[in-house]
Image 1: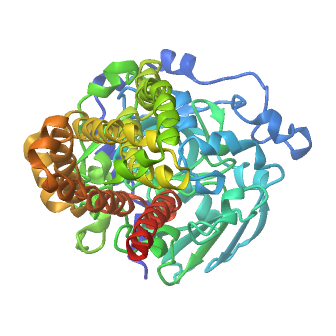
Image 2 (image 1 turned 180 degrees about the vertical axis):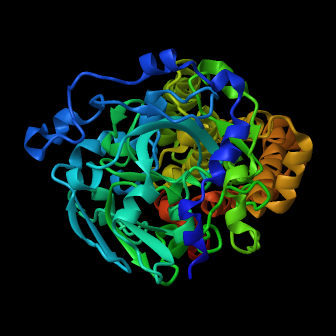
Length: 335
Length: 208
């Protein structure tokens, strides 16, 4: 029996969320309906058949169509701008400097896209992206993103709970972890020509982390499809962990018994643990994690230099929802 | 010693001096460009993470100017261009200038003037300890870089200022230590340049 699977049908987290929602965040239904992002079909019509899809070059940054529910747990903190979030990226496959991924973004072709699902599950196989996405209603969730490099952003993601996707593959009782891999193709992802990390990029979650309602499979941000530098067409968002856990451009999902090897952990095991939960008390060997520089649309010009560094919160401020996952774990050892 | 050797080649030295006269103000302006670029970049919101970017620019240029300063003597001898020596002090002071900006940005903007945090970081993180040591050393060299100090210190001055080799080694270590394993290319280039510069001096010493 896997303790993690207990949380599958457990909706206690919503109560915890509800207690955190400020009254200002509760919107009258009429306004809420108006605000729904119902955007004209300029691009990716999710649920549309593959034949109606435009080539991806044309769809990158295209508005997402259809109803996108606003998730009630979203933070109302000042958001990072679309430009900030899509020009300052760690996506080493498209270059190691922060400005490289946006420059090299058009090398990556995401149409067609296939995701291979395997390991300890009943219904694995190869799936076209359209088939992965079809059954899922999209929602917009504004999450804090805390990079291990001590900066943070606030980003409105569009996606659906990873748990809803994983359940479709019917993981068995031996599925204790989920391993994810990014596309490996040194032509499309030229950074893979250099041995800066072990390629393809690999990440993993414990099954209960993967099934947690906060864990999001994202297909868009700011109401648009994911730009390539942000991990198109399919990426993970795990808001209580350092950003590098939220793997981009996923082509493989594997249910496994043993803790999977992950790229940054292989590269520098003392610096990047498997868990990599945001934790202000466990400092990186080279810098403190107690504070962070918030990069939002207010940080402009010279005033950006003097914005106060904010204190980093345990689990990136999502402790009420996720702390119980780690109640019997020494987080200093299992960083 | 060095200036005498070059002065024997009177013509070369003279031509070098006039070139230097043209060059020095130009080099001064060029050496300021990274700082100008940085200020412009901040003003026009070009850096998404401006504090981080400023730390990177000033740190890199501090180290680059240390290495450039160490190139002066080899250039002087290899190209028989005595006048270039006139740039040495200015280039060294630019290394100190960028190192001081680097430290000031770290204390004021990165640490938010929280001195307790800064001291803790200096004690706990070895690469920061090294960085502080480099800056203190450069401070001593900058303060004693004027003619009065050269005269006053006599032979000791040269010994004191050969500290620049140690400081450059420490500065490269400071840089290597804080980059990710995946970003070792740039510090490797500096390390290689430093190795060549030290080797050149070593071979010259052995030859004599």
